[in-house]
Length: 247
Length: 142
Image (tube, one colour):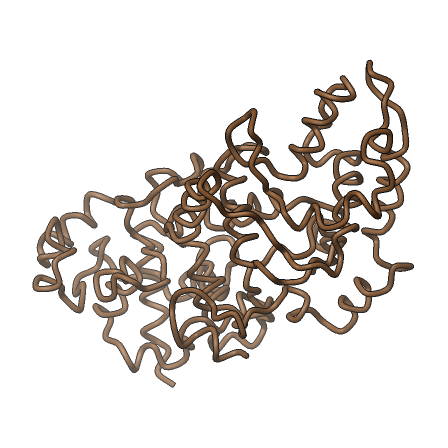
């Protein structure tokens, strides 16, 4: 496994794809696997409460339209980011939840990385646990996917690094003390031990940009959604783990 | 200091034509500052996770440092494998030897995209720091 990533540049062959889970210690894997100790499950529980709570000027709960999430939301998170016909661009799951809040519940959008938005995202994400990632690539989403792909392979920042140089070319090797994972977003939102909190994929992407000393993007920026779309496509067929735990 | 570096690069034929393999050189033989670096300071720069960042990717003979990287060659013996001038070039801008290298150019500010405002137009290490690191690496003979 350690050598496989080093030998060739370019896309990781499907048979060699690994979730970040596979690079974790036994203890951290155990924390994710056991719902009674996985800290992300607290957010899932809170998300379940929010799902059923009426809110906004419309006085409507998510459940009033979508019903039982275990049925209606099954597999949904595995298909995001997804194309929004009104906005004419892909939106991620957090943005989809906020569009629903504004348009259907007539409530103010929830702030990115707020406890409530992470809880709802984790709750919807949990309904896809165990299902394969399955974003839709068609004529509408393809250009955005290509933008995300270009960003993944673009060297940037003062350290002049592309995502691909670590996550395609050097996965399995150690960056300081940490095994470099392949950057498959299988478990978001994740409880990250380094954060001591739950966080979104965009938070993680922003961390990496800081690490290579590159300009950041605002939460919700189209560039970040495009990168999310590419990463989900790159992880197509891999199993959703939400809520994941990561070091 | 940047001016000095440019001057040295120009003298060595590493200026505007540096991207052309036909003009690539394997060494920057003279000090960027005109002075010898301090190997003690160089060692401190190398082991710093905020300044040199070297141990994120490299391992080396630094027994007190935990969590060293392994995506790049071990620094042990660097002073035997490379001359002072070869080390200097590899730190200043390794891409002049291998355009696809993962190693950041430590003393170059052009040709970079989307650099964060705090780091814009600043090299990773200034000329004095480069000389300190070179001075230390040349001592790694084993």
